[in-house]
Length: 378
Ligand code: ADP
Image 1 (cartoon, rainbow, N blue to C red):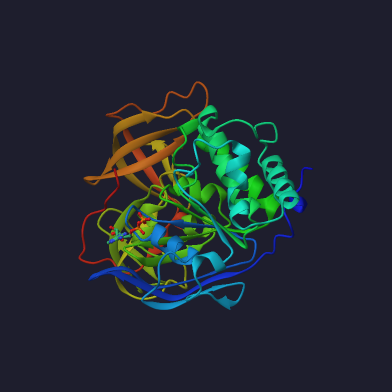
Image 2: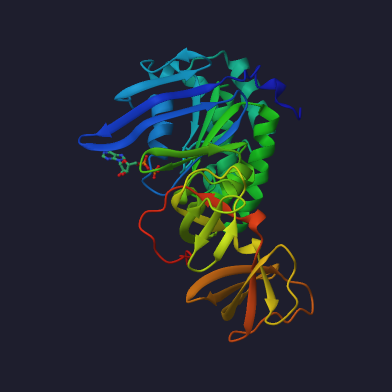
């Protein structure tokens, strides 16, 4: 049995947060959170520690009541429905397995509590263990399993109750780095097999980008952007997203509408033409990914259509697939990533270089506060 059919008919349902706010005493933790999650979507809640991700998950599970707003599952308002009537399965960060019970006993636990007939319990436990690839491990105890296997038991236990929605709280954070990357693809494959609407919390942007269909990014309890991984990376809605998702160089400056079309003027970059639809005037910021910057030996004949700035390499970090340079341009330190090919010597610190910026690769970010010098996150 290698498909999800034995685990009941899992229905794909939409999940919606509509204007949800919550405070603990006088501390506002979530403010006007609205997210519409599609049926069957693998959806990530991403944000720094303390941004309110777990609180959102707990609200959806029914462990907390929102101060304002509504939560809908399958189109039905569940805001006041107690957790045990919501049909939502949650896998906790620490797996919460019973150490004295066998794997089979752990997976059966929720079903026994629900007083399902014995034959039905046996069928579901076998199907859930098969689904997570632990068909042969039913008699072991959690202590006799690896971290990755324990996590699969926790998943099997939740899947066995045939929830409408699956919630995963930092599902990979307890695993070591290598296993974490391996389990990403396993988790994705399992989610696809089940087809169940799945929402997972993570503070790891790489994890969210690599497996989620869409991601909601939270900061201080406010949604900053909801989008596909590519949308977040290529079209960050604001400075927070630009710096939180991936590495980026930021250049403060001013939008000027003169001449043939809008342009961006900055102390470091000089003047860069903007796409004709670039809105507004005044203070703004330009964001450029490190790998979108080019590097050439000083004095080399420059590629057309690219703006070249003179600089000097200050640091060189060899990372295998690519080399990360720090290049000082007009007193500002930029991060420049260049692909590495065998035999490529690169540029040693101290080398005079030219940094190329392709105007097609820059992203204009709205409203920069006071003009300040370009900043690169360290
Ligand atoms: P995240 O999951 O993004 O790390 P949380 O949702 O756990 O964030 O927490 C959001 C904010 O709510 C944090 O500032 C946290 O300190 C606060 N918080 C969480 N639980 C409680 C609680 N029971 N009482 C008071 N403050 C809390």
